Length: 461
Ligand code: BES
Ligand code: ZN
Image 1 (cartoon, rainbow, N blue to C red):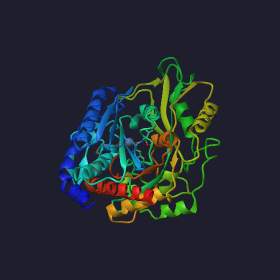
Image 2 (image 1 turned 60 degrees about the vertical axis):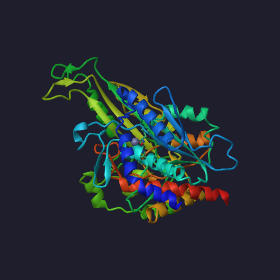
Image 3 (image 1 turned 90 degrees about the horizontal axis):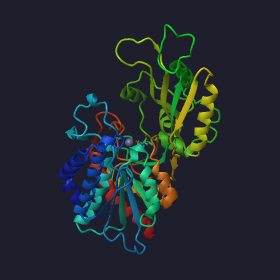
Image 4 (image 1 turned 30 degrees about the vertical axis):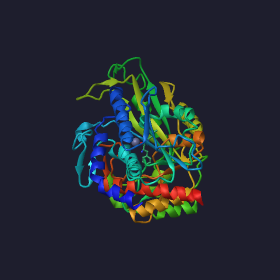
């Protein structure tokens, strides 16, 4: 192990340069104009893995390719050796609005011990840390106690559509003891974290159709309903002033937090004033019965993500708009079923809609929340690896974001996922000026190097 950690220490500067090369690909999965960039990024990644001895392949899909890279020999009969899958994604969120970036999103810059660029934290830097740990084993000739297969996809930010089928097709090669995912966060650099729950999600688009075309509001206004007004009135009834969702039945399946979980929440650092300042809000919001940390990760929500209607240009335009549209998502907690929630939302919206307009609701498919025991042997092994690498006591957290594919790992591969996130709350994931802390990058590599020992030792006992 000493050789592995020495190798990691001695090669940090090169690893950072490689992360820069990786971040330079504008692999924006949501934008068709970047299709070729995703392909180039996948091929770069596969070549990068081959250079230090992984057997890597790029699998084309209907949309963006999947990269699979295995430690040598992992294909043969494993003879009782443990096998772990590391999952990550090389696709990134759209960088817009460009004008808010201090340096261009795909021209990585080093500043204040962090690397700035879209995808640096979510998720290129995080899974590159695992690749570098495995590189250290292979390049120093240190025997790995297990086989490892990396599955790095290009559609996470757009729903992982291709990966689901891929898992089914490659079920036997991907059969594993556990899946390791670093695509979540940690509260501070001194609080390395094992995430044991994620929220699920269901997405909706609500369209209120009014008159056949935009109308002169002086000539017709008053005699026809206004779709923008109707949409606002409907949406305003979806929650009360404390943030409780008013959709009948919405909370039916929500399980209360256990005393153990509430204790874990209490261990987390939280300063309300700083949090408020960091987010730029005059005051926090939410249900009285739960703390802000509980609200943002362990309670379900309904958010308006986008709202459009009428004239948005300069000056005024006196119209009754023909339509109004809202993009909405509900974040779900364990035990809430997306299909049931989608039906409840649909039914309630239909009930609230007046007969003066026509309501259209489009729904994407939903993802269930995720929950895995934070006290099992693998979880404890992961906590030991975190502690060794970061040099401080790790915390157990629930996260509010979603990684829908982890449910498929459970369903298709029958494997639990260990979520060992390396992102900091101020990494600006999905926002302008995304960054990845280079300390987290280095400690993440160290954590990964220890993890293979810890997880394999559990299996030898
Ligand atoms: N890395 C995030 C998920 C995440 C972030 C989990 C922070 C926990 C804490 C991932 O890349 C992501 O953004 N997922 C989307 C999923 C959606 C597009 C279905 C999300 O949560 O919005
Ligand atoms: Zn993301």
